[in-house]
Structures are given as structure tokens and as C-alpha cells.
Length: 606
Image (cartoon, rainbow, N blue to C red; front, top):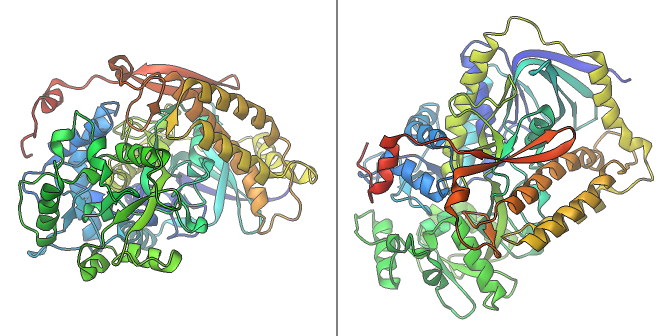
């Protein structure tokens, strides 16, 4: 067996996006030793691609806003399937986390009186998203990265973790390799925090970056944790559709938050006809009212006008666009038109600088002069590792998770902007939970040599099958299965077919082969990534088949209604003797004082 590096920490954080950096900073600040592993280079986390803003009820623009309204919006957006305690903590603590970020040096857009400016987003009652133009995620990572580096956290870049170790039933460390040259590395740790993001690369069209291969989902599942709500995949309604090389690249919801209008190829503003009856009264009734709302947003004036229909929740807008294209009303390249060119060009360039340059440089489209072509792109998974709301610990002692890799916070559909505040709130809580946990562990982690040798053997095997199956062919087939049978709309026949095809394809993972050396070998990396993507893909498909209703981001054509009975359960997925097993687990009961908030139209300011 080859040699491997050995490092020892109290807490190992896997992932250096907003959640991972927040967790590492917090744990380190509590006096425990922390190692931070990132699959890419530091500063290139997927968080930098988050554009619209951080949802927090600061009430700088709309004085009526408060945590109770934010909590209510989040629960309603998630169709009440959320872990209520997570949604409560998120709404209560998000303002302090934004202020802390500002204290650490984050630069936000400002109101005339110098407060952090906030913009409107889909599903939010008030203008709530704190932003830096359309580059908010980039500013967050810059700030957290600087804080973490100056705090002295040990960082391991371009390092992929392939295995978690346990001493009895509790976490004892992790094994991985450096992507540059393939050398192996062992981390001994009393606690591990997963902050690895989502599963987007299991789909062919996604806004997610290359790192999103379900690493944390796979690691947690293999370690004995359960995954919940995996059927809920958010397709962001607006991704680029042209040219093909950038298909799926995110077009921020901030475009619609600043007044962008969706039209089909007939020039119709089609979102009016897709508003659900339950929320129809929350949106403008016609173009005149929508225009009044936009004019107030531009001038900063108060208005009683309701928000435009384009600011409906993401699941609803994505389905609307899908239907328009399916019915022959799409744009030339298979999307619809998003137009903000009716606003002054200077304002568009100031408020949406990244979008302006993105379309100008990649598609040769001037968004100040004409419409963009957009369409749904796989964007976010609401499901993930089941965690305790207060500590972020999974059911495996010493294993914590925060951010997109964790489940429960967003229910069946995430509101825009809640992801960035989620990272800050629960990244910090995971850091606190892990630090408190390791302070109660007095023994050093024990990792048997045989376990390390087995982890190395697993990584070496593709080279022994140089004439084996090409891993890229397997990934292409996976993409076809997920997009064809487990997409925006689902039914029993398609899901059963998709699951059967996944079972057939699964056997090919153990037959993939690769040539060459370990240095700069992306095919070798994919051989390992495929296992994680398959675990996540199977969990999505099987959970979607079990949930016989339509709720949030999960749409069944054969069960189009939202059924009250299914609102009582989360779908739980776990490994039982090598077989993926599903259970319906009861949602925790919400306290009476929080239930009362849903009996009122607008909760009192708090």
C-alpha cells in the first residue's frame, strides 16, 4: 500500500463554502483545533455563484418586517413540511448573522440613510434580501475567507474526501486524496462537519458547479446517517438556454426582483394565469399594479401595490415556464423571454452588473436593449442529512451537517435568499455543536489500519480495469435517466422505469476503468464521484415514488393534489444491510404560539 499523510484535528470541516467557513470560524473561536478541506481552491466555492441576496428580516426597507413574518413565509414556501424549529432559528438569527458579516468587513448596497439595502424576492412578503448588486455570494465568501485565514485555520485545498471512519458508533476521522497528484491523506478527528453542498451534477442541465457531486450525501449515507426529503429538487426557473456551452447557468432571481418580466413567444405576460388560488391575492392583478410596484421599487417609495406575478415561488414559476415551452409558446432555443430592458440602462447595469456582463460576454445579448432567453435549470436540493435543529448533529455521533447537504430547513421548496442566511445561521450552529461535542470526548480517535487499506484499495481499483467501462459513458446515462424520468414532472410509470434503469446502471460503477496516472486525471475523480451521485439519484427517485401527491418542488401528474396526510411526514432514506430503505417519519409538532402565526395574514412585527 502507498504512503499517506496523517493530520489530526478535533473538528474536520469538509467544504469551504458559506456553511463550511462559518462552521470552521465558530469552532476555531471556541478553542478547538480545526481542519478545513475543500474540493476546489479556497474562494471558488459554489456559494460565490449565489447572486440575489441574503434573506434576513432587518426591516431596513419595509419597517413591518420581522422574524415572525420571515418564519411564516419560509414555512408556507416549504408547504409546511419544514422542520419548524430550524425555520424558527433561521428567521430569528439571520439578522444577527448578517450584521456579524458586516462587522467582519462585508460591503453591502445601502439605503439613502446608510442602512443595508434590501430587495424583493419570490415568496417573501417584504423586501428582505440584503445584497451587493448581484454578487452577494462572492462578497460573503471573500469576507468569511479573510476571517478564517486570519484566525489561523488549517486549510487543505483541492482535496476530496472519499470515506468517513467510525470508532464503534461515533466518527473517528476521514480519508481522501489530493486531486492534483493523487496522494492520499488521513484525517483523524473527533467530529466531522459536512458542508459539501448539493447533487446538481446528477442532472445534465444545472446551475451547480462541478464540485456538486453529492459527496456529503454519499458519505453520510455510508456512515449510517439518514437522508430526508430527497424527492424535493428545486428547478430554478431562470437559467441561460443559449449558447449550449452555458445552458443552465443561473440567471438570478434578482432580475425579476428588480422588475424583470416573463413573456412567451406571443408576447404574453403568462405568469398571471399560473398563480395558485391560495396565494393569488398576494400578487398584482394586472400590468398597471405591477408597474406601480416596480416604480416604487425604483424610487424607494412606499406603495400598497402587490408584487408582480413573476415573484411567485420558484417551483411555481419553473412549472409555468415548462408548460409554456411544452405548449409551443417558447423562445427559439427552448425557453421563454425575461425582459428588463424597459428600465433605464444605467439602473440595470448598476443593480445587475454580473447579469449584464454574463449575457454580453457569453451570449452576445445586451440585456439593457432586449430580452434574455431563460428556462428551468436544476438548482438546489431541499433534501439532505437529517440533523438536530439546534446542534446540526446527525444520528451518527460526531457527524454534523450544515447548508445544502443538510435537510429539514426548507421543507418542500426553498425561498430565494434563504440559502445564504441558512449557511450563516446553521454553519455557525454546526461549529458550536461540534466544538461542544469534542470537548466531551476524552479519548483519541482509533482508525484500524485495515480500514485505511480498504479505502486505498477502493481508489486504486479503476486503474486495474484499464479496459473497463468509461466513467463518462456511465455519467451520460445517469443524466439521461434523471432528466427523463425524475425531472420537473413525475408519474409512477416514469419513476418505476427510472429506478429500474438506475439499478441496471448501478452494476456498471464497479466496472468503470481508467488509464494514465493519478496526476491531473479527471476520469479517475469521476470514478469515485459516480458512487455518491448514484446514492443521491436513487434516493431522489425512490422518495419521489413514495410521495403520492404534489407538494412544493415535487410535482406528480398522476397525483396533482396536495394531500394533508402526506404533510405529516418526511421521507427518510437510510442504508439497511446494503439495501436503500425508506420510511415515512412524523414531522415534529409545532408549538401553539407558532401555529397562531398562520391564522393571521401578516404576523406582528417582532
